[in-house]
Length: 81
Image 1 (spheres, rainbow, N blue to C red):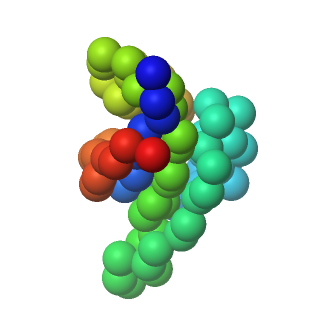
Image 2 (image 1 turned 45 degrees about the vertical axis):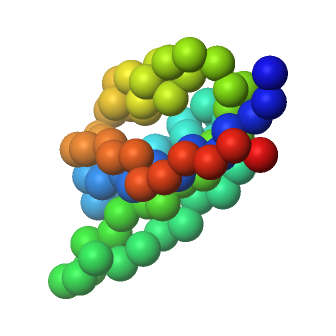
């Protein structure tokens, strides 16, 4: 099996961004970028490299959603590498 790159847009509670970034890194995030949406609100564009297997994206999304302080998680894109 190959690998897949998955990009998530994560909307965190603004006062917990540092802790959320640490937890995303522990889940294997390769890159975490802060993107200002407006009015001081920041979303996190997060890149993961996963083994290409059935439902790997869904499993990771469930783990991310369980992190305290995350309001929403959205897949922005996937690609095989």
